Image (cartoon, rainbow, N blue to C red):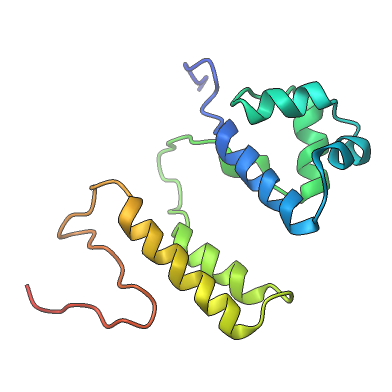
Length: 142
């Protein structure tokens, strides 16, 4: 079934944010990224402005950063298995990062959860209550 939207539901901003996090984590400059991937500075600049990369650049950057671009495509499919919760994925990644000690991973996890709770959309309902912040018990009174 073809997708009707022009952007094919690709979250270019999300992909760029994940790519930028990889660049920062590796302590590199965007010039170095371009040299290592063969992606032009122009393409990297356009991406920073919210534009989508061409297929070859997307492939090169994805391979370089070990990012699966399929994770940035939002398609609603019948019978699709539910995706893991973003906070669970973030927590798992932080705690598995060998460059972070347990206390640092926990501190980052708490900060991200707190920010997430403050910034997420107001779509929480009694069926989907917000998750308690790490280290805090859930409020059971209703």
